[in-house]
Length: 322
Image (cartoon, rainbow, N blue to C red):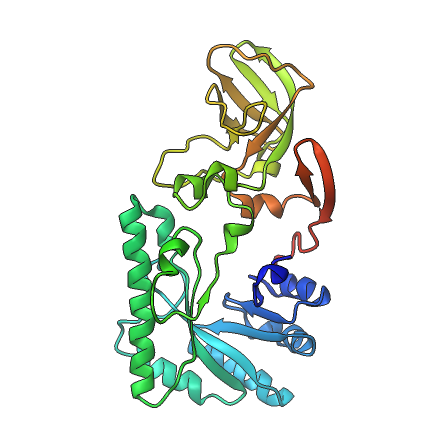
């Protein structure tokens, strides 16, 4: 569906996810994740069905991929992961050896260095729109500057790829970038609303939950515990406390009188402000804090128009964590 709307490929975190999408006919797959060379046989099999690229940020890992591809007589596209401020994976672009690392990867047999890739994950902790804009601008500056340094040393890097949903609306304005990877845009969630990346109307995923208990006038219990909603808290510029937001009957606004204050594995305990007409057996829709994890916890998603189920889609890549 995304390809039909103009996407040119798909990003996956794990090889198992990529295998599912390749089997479905997706022929352009990027793994912006530090995949270990222990997965070489699986990646080689993927390369028979699709154009595949991965990232590297460690010399030993890069050499492992070089050795595996050389033995197989193949060439694997790679991008170098750059740490633009999130401090998770990636090389330090300001380190003295950054350019040397690029040269070393470019010289390895069996690998084709395509460019630089980053994830501005620290945008999720931004305190304002202005800070998000600054993070996006700085990310683009880091990639383009390092790319220009590489070009000046004789290494042409064709791609500069960025991906973080909160910063996307600012990244799209930056010059010098060749790829945007806004992973969460398909569903959006409460965190993206709190970050200003989406409105409530933009959010496509909700959890249909049932009231299973009403032990007191000020407390109801839903059947969507941590196994459904996850234990993730929402992050954002605006405050979004609790473990999700219960929508009103029409589903077009958040019911501020209902606060999901805690979760057990199978229970969501909701504190009621004032009174609620909800009783055991009634159903509500819950906007999750983090749709990415929620989608990995269910077998299927229902496409709905109001109360009508239009289609059911299996979550084929569920649980593909390796």
